[in-house]
Structures are given as C-alpha cells and as structure tokens.
Length: 430
Ligand code: PMP
Image (cartoon, rainbow, N blue to C red; front, side, top):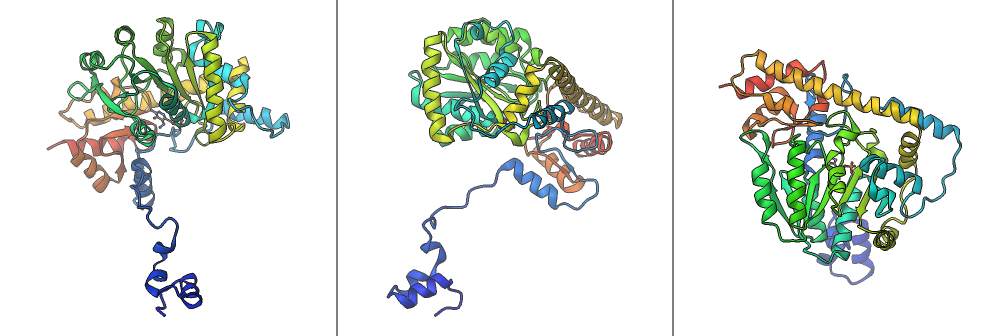
C-alpha cells in the first residue's frame, strides 16, 4: 500500500474491496474535491504582503481603515464612553427583533435623512438593521432579484468599490458601468455620467456613492447632484445610495448627507445602504442599515414583511452589541455632540495629511500637477500613479497600495508623510 495514502484511504482499501486508485486520492474522496481554489481578495492580499515585509519604513496605504497620527487603530472616545455606559447597565443578551431594534433603525434613518424628513414623518420608509454596509448592499440587491418588477439591471460608476459588482455576480444580477471619473481632470465627469444615465433603460437601478467616493475621492458638487437628481427622475431610475463614509468627506454628517436628502426632497423612491464601520470606527462590529423609501406607508409595511422573511432565512436577527453602541450615541445629545467632534477630528486629520502630502511632493520640484490630492475628499486619494509607478513604490520604497494608484490617506501620518512624498516624487520623475 503506498505510504502517502491517508489512514482513511488505507482502511478503506484494506477493509473493503475499493480499488487502491479510487481510495488513493484525498481530494477524490472529499465531498468537496471539485471545489477550485478561488482568487485571493485584492485588498487583503496587499495587507498580507505588507505584513511579510521586514523593512523598517514600510507603509500600508491599501487598507481602508482610519488610523491615528501614530498609525494605530483609533477607538473614538465617544464610542468608548458608550461602551462604558452599556457595560454599567448590565444588559442581557436576548435576541434582537428580526429587523433590529426600532430605536436603532429610527435613529440611523434620522441621521441619514435628517430630522425634517417627510418620509420618516409619514412612515413611508422601511429600515432594517444589517451586517454593516456590505450586508445592506447584499440584502438590498437580493431583494431586487426577488421583488423588483422593473428592469433588473444595476449600473455602477466607473470605477467603483470592487465588492459592488461581485455582489451582483453572486446574485446573478446583471450590471453595467456608467462614466464617473475623468482621469484627465482627476475629477467628476458630469457630461459622461449624464449621457450614460440618459441611455439607461427606464426602471433600472443606479448605484450612487452618497459621499467620499471609493476609490476616487471625487464627489459631485451640489449643483451636479441637482442635475443628476433631475435626469435620474426623468429616466424613472431607482437610485441606490451607498453611504459608507457619512462624515468622512467634509467632517460634517449633515453636509455629507446632502445628496440623500436632496433625492428624498425631490421625491425619489430611493434605497440606502448605511455603515457605521468608518464613522464610528466599528469595523468589526458589523453594524449598518438598509432603507427603502417606498412612497406610502402601506407599501413600506409590505416591504418590511418581505425583508423580515429574507433576514429570517439568512441569519434570523442581527447582532446587538454594535447597534447598542450606535443607539447610545445617536440618542444621547451629549454623546452625539462628542461623536460629531470625533468624526470631525478624523476628517480633519485626513485633510491635513492631504495638504502635507501634496506640498511634500511639490517641495521636491515635481513637474506633475498634484492639485487633485487636496481636491479629492474622504478616506481615499486616486493618485493617478501608473501601474509601473505603483510597482516601484512597493518594490523600492516598501509602500503598499492598490494597482490602480488608490491610497488610503488615513494610513498617512506625520511620521511617514515626508517619506511617502519623496517616494512619490521619485517614481514620477524621469
Ligand atoms: N461601500 C463602500 C463604497 C465601501 O468602501 C465599503 C467599505 N470598504 C462598504 C460599502 C462596506 O463596508 P462595511 O461592510 O465594512 O460597512
């Protein structure tokens, strides 16, 4: 008997008359033997490579998580306080309702749509707690596959967050692209976007990043949002907002909700995915929400009943820890005030790093235009670095980022900004 055979295979071959060639291969004997190796996640792959690198000056600009000025994960002081408050209440660990606690869903919907929202007042919204922003997108898109009666075609901006098309692929939901980023100006391509929107079939779904677009850091201006709202309405499209960074764009959660609130005011029956990963630093708590503005309260109630069925068969009910923290903060005026200051602090540090990176590159006499570094907003900067320049940054300078030249500005700190600026200057100079 071949020594390399597994014990199970040897027993099989000895005790039954199973031919050796049949029992020899472990893979062949597994129920899952035909499962192929999948490609690694692009962003997590970068972090893996960064971890293996032993260079003392290595920098990870790949991962989209906020870091303080020492490069460390940041626990928001307001969140810490909320944790202590919750701990002192000795709360139980009973199940949450299927859609999450009503106090939570009310508070998060109000954060997005504002206290004057007509939809919230008239209860024409339907809001459920989700597993962070990803869970909201997945649930929303899956709901479309089951219940949407119009054109089941999702349009994403070019470029967009890599997980958007992947979720559609998983759901076998057709998706297409509309023009968004203009590489020449490093800004928003309003004309291209409008032309593409006009060509979309009536009833199709258009995904919009509510603020702090990932990966480009380019958002439409207020007047541009107004134009988009008008033509999206004319074309009778269903806007699906992804708001993973409320507060991160301008440091003000109300400013960052401008587009969502404008679309509500203009009567769109929109969808909204919210995440508290970034603006409360609750990455691992997986706390978010999905809202539909349904037009009337009866439809909202029907939608809620169907959402509950979908949630019940997926994970029964959401987790309670993260949503308690969010609720504690949003429903206490003092804590909320502190949280808004924490958000501003994070956004301001990012803005400062943008300025220092740009001036750092320019100080070296670099001939390229780096205005977009300070024009773009939010956590990410689409540097415009070409793939060979990105490769040089990683190989020669141990600076890790995605191949498309996107950097997470949150990974830049006072300690590494000059090093990064010098490296970016070197790889972009002849
Ligand atoms: N949408 C966008 C555009 C994002 O960048 C992210 C996070 N990278 C998410 C949604 C979802 O993040 P999470 O599931 O952690 O809330």
